Amino acid sequence: MVDWQFFALLLSNGVLIGLMYSLIALGFVLVYKATDAINFAQGEFVMIAGFLVAVALGAYGAPLWLAVALALAVMIAFGFGLERVMLRPLIGRPIVAVIMATIGLAAILRGFGPLMWGAETKPLPLPIPDEPIVWGPFFIPPIQLLGAGVSLLFLAIFGWFFLRSRQGIAMRAVADSQQVAMAMGVNVERYFALAWAMTGIVSALGGLIWGNLLGVDVHLALVGFKVFPVVILGGLDSIPGAIIGGLIVGIVENVAAGYIDPWVGGGTKDFAPYVLMILALMIRPYGIFGKQIIERV
Amino acid sequence: MLALNNIEVIYDGIILVLKGASLNVREGGITTLLGANGAGKSTTLKAISGLLRSERGEVTKGSIEFHGERVDRLPPHEIVRRGIVQVFEGRRVFEHLTAEENLIAGAHVVSDVRRVREGIERVYEYFPRLKERRAVQAGYLSGGEQQMLVIGRALMSRPRVMLLDEPSLGLAPMLVEEIFGIVQRLNREEELTVLLVEQNATLALTIAEHGYVMENGRIVLEGSADALRENADIKEFYLGLTEVGARKSYRDVKHYKRRKRWLS
Image 1: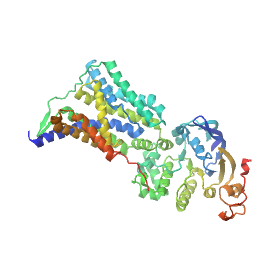
Image 2: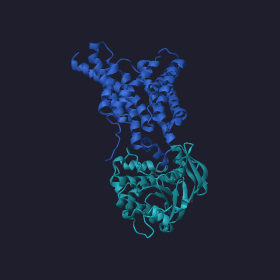
Image 3: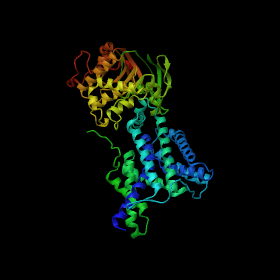
Image 4: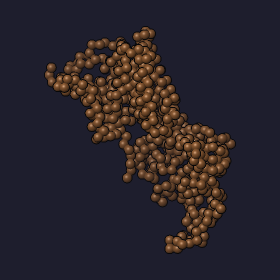
């Protein structure tokens, strides 16, 4: 294979995988943007959603649309409920309290999924062909194309929501200052709940796509860890940042794996994004698109 | 129209900040609340707007009534819906939103989009400078523009009463005059009732018709603005004038120090 063809292949793969990372990162960004909470359970959300779809399909033989609808409904309800039960009492507490709470939640969910539905890896079949689409030098698995498409669609929808809709503006206002937003008549708690519900939607879709790609078991939650390099590169609160961060992480890990793995015997994929993350933290701690702290002089 | 009856406010379940304060805001007028730092002025405003709870404060005694309805147990968004809006001190704009987005966020309780549009135009009429700067991130506006923006933003909810907390803080005298002029215009033209908290007593007493003086969480003095301006204690402690009416000079610092009569 000619060298540039190999590179193009890695690149295209990286782009598609990267966009799928963006989808999950979007869930994280939505919560951070609205509530300033760092959700360490993002991967676990995706895992639970994956379990829901896989079990509905496999154990109950539900049609795909029903399984997806169910996962969406449960994840939205889960988002609302979580805000109500776990996060509302923490409003006004130090941010560390929320972080610890989500770490605890992550552990609970990691235990709950296998306990409820069994620890073995479940398939999550989707009615799309397995054979990759060959197009010039590119070699594209249909699931990745679907994942990237869904990602872009939802990134666009939520991007529009935040930039243009009145609710989106209110949500950004809440993120800027909860107290002032309250004084403007914004029901802050309702917006927190909305943000968590939106994360539920994104996680359900992420669970569907990543579940198909990796199979559903407790390891699906590990996808959540990739969110950190993505959002730190792109900016914790930026939707375009989630796209760009996802693309960078996807491309870097694929290209690095393609060229360095033969020398070191594998594993590059898993650490290259974090090296990048640390570099990013040293150079631009608020990310490429993250909001800068405005200081007038 | 808006009445505070003997309210007591406790923060964190232990710190007593307001110790039985009563005041009455007259419909269509400008009422001012004067007092030194830490007297409890801002707390009074937050008690009215329902924002105490976000700071772990609570109205433990007394009542707040608006048009005869008790509002001291309502959440802040319900109070905004009833027509009371608070403008914080210190120009708290939504920094990362543009000026116009700030206005849109201010109209959160107005559901009709057309009325939001009208509201924005109305704010631009009062503050033409905001129109020029509509697309700028609010964090980058100048201090005066930010103060105009927070007043404009509060107007967007179509309030009957505006609780205005120290609009003169940290602004150049000319800007302060401009902003006070606009507040007066809003009061006259929009029939907006204003409760103005100020450190700058001279200025506040020129635009208000009634005033209260607060100290240590209690109302210690009240009266018409004219009466307060003539009050010897107010002159000494808030207007910086001696009894003769001349400005105090640092040459005779060893003057007889007046006691605050209301403390005895």
